Length: 283
Image 1: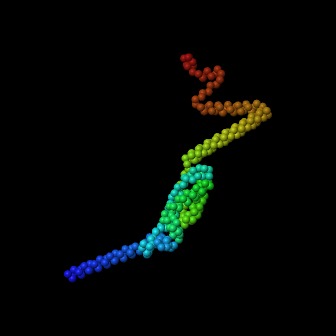
Image 2: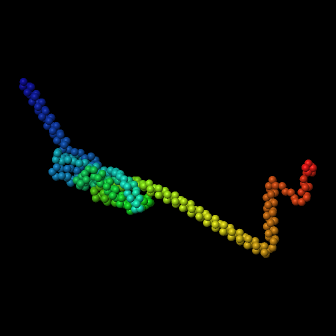
């Protein structure tokens, strides 16, 4: 009987110890929280509200139920959003913007108090669209291509300034895509075709002008040559013309003599002496 009571007492003590250890472990676990690398924690206290100090990486203590940690990722994260904006000449342009952002660590309590954990999703799309529309409205549609570096620089500077007002740091801002509406694309194509036609017409006009000048120069040369021949004839008589005629005849005779398909027959009745009598008799 005594041994049974001792066993029951022992088991009761073990159960109490286990319960105490379990409660202590639970309380200890509830009093600890871990902040991983690239993160910061903001503590909300039920009595004092959001504490002004941020908690860095590591394992830390807090008061269970009274305090609660909220973890922020402070690493740079990409965000992409699109905007349809109107240009200075009333053309619609579709732009895609990519930004790399991170929160200002010293202002995390303020960010949590006013914007919450999803601060970037609440702020960046709205200010991004605002800045894009304001910058694009300063340029014509074609200037967005010819002056793209200048446009990107204006967007970057304006967006960085606007993000600072919300305690957000932008490490990079870039326009990744730019496209025009269908009507403007057709207008650009028609303009290119018109420019090509204008260049072709310009070439035709220049060619006709060159041909006209060549004809004038040729006519002037022929006129000068005729004048010189007339003067030479008046001085030397018809001998110059006869000389040119003889030279031309000699050139023609030389050309014909080198052609095997051309036979030369002297003029007059003596040409018949070279014919075959048998052939004449047969006729």
